[in-house]
Image 1 (cartoon, rainbow, N blue to C red):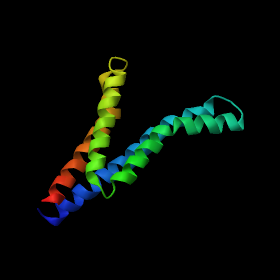
Image 2 (image 1 turned 30 degrees about the vertical axis):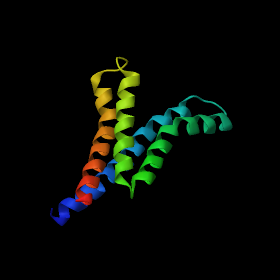
Image 3 (image 1 turned 180 degrees about the vertical axis):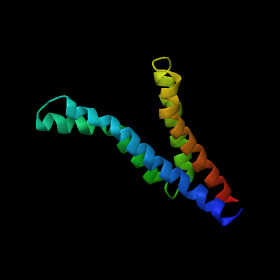
Image 4 (image 1 turned 90 degrees about the vertical axis):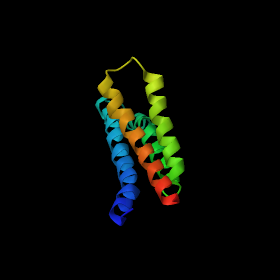
Length: 116
């Protein structure tokens, strides 16, 4: 396999997971519209950022061990679909679970090709 393809397979899941973490962090910004006090707003912000912390933790684990990222990102995407099935339109599943599944697959492909 050519070096540019290997480099693309190395960096694309990492960049995609960083972009996804930034995307889901945007949903935490609604705590500022509640008009609560300072400490209540800080607590609400930390609670809303738990999914972002999970994504960053998984990315940290999978930076050198791609198979971990492949399994965990795929599991997160599938779990999101299972637990929220029927609650949202299909575009929501594509926007939230799609990047997780794609990231997991890219990590697994990168790991598999690097092992060969």
